[in-house]
Image (cartoon, rainbow, N blue to C red; front, side, top):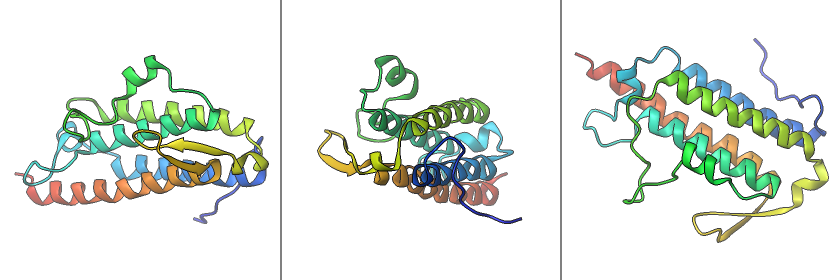
Length: 174
């Protein structure tokens, strides 16, 4: 098998390349989580003090959803905030997710990826230098180009956590 990042049809070259990086990481997330039981999806590590795969997938999905709306230059609709969020709980941690199936979590993420595709089709390479704000209080600024790269990077970062959870789960199963 040959791996490559190729632009997406209907997108300008750099936008398509960055979108492709996000999609490849989404596909990798699906691959590394494939076949997980509900118990494993909800597993929080050997001492029950880590974020579960369910929490991590929901988190990556919600972060990407926020980025899609930043890229569009629009606020995230309240209905989507309620459906996908919140970003953190009252203790500033990832919200508890328990009992939500892997297929439901991945399906929601796939919906965000479709929204991203539609958004990227509207962007041009020249748009990539536009600034957007992000962060808990919108105190940070980045280009759209960085935002797309960050979506791919952020997903990959949490995939390492999921891989570790899978290892621990296999080692700690009765």
